[in-house]
Image 1 (tube, rainbow, N blue to C red):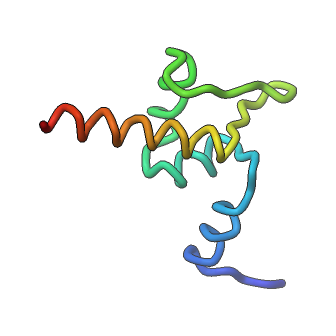
Image 2 (spheres, rainbow, N blue to C red):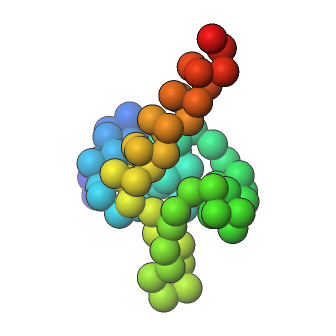
Amino acid sequence: MLHLDAGVAFLVSESREVMNVRQASQYLGISPDTLYRYITEGEIPAFKLGNRWKLRKTILDRWMERKMSQATARRR
């Protein structure tokens, strides 16, 4: 059995275009509970595949860019 350390596993999840909630929360650096709240409040776009939430990495990247821009604008 191949064992990957957390850093390598994180890099693998970073390269995925579609992530589950656990992967996306690690990518964003927030808890899964916080991510579920953002999804249900419409803060972060997500879609359901079956009964599981999925998130696209490109959309998460755009969301983070918007958040950083808003934070920068507020500091001015």
